[in-house]
Image (cartoon, rainbow, N blue to C red; front, side):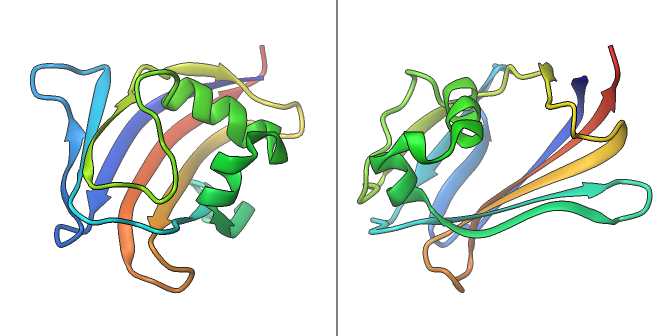
Length: 147
């Protein structure tokens, strides 16, 4: 099974993040300019069928600091982290204010056979607290097809 990226939408909280988007003049690199210290961060991730809006995968409040301290806790998130962050940025907790770079080069990836074919939306939200306000949100639209 192959997933092909069809589009990406980025949102961010302007009181805690000064900028989140493409590096000016580049299409393969994104930049986050964080203005606050974050002692911990939490991730919500949801995959929905784009046609029916039915949720097929949902995780809430994954501790980013817990993951950064032990990336073996999730092989799936480790693979995504390596492809998205790689060696371009070092994330440690607490996350210090500053400029961080992320890859925007994922266009086509293999997905597990359990992922159904069709059109989907992957929404990833980062928060400073479990029930806190949004820091950043990424929405990928993609199509999965059998190969």
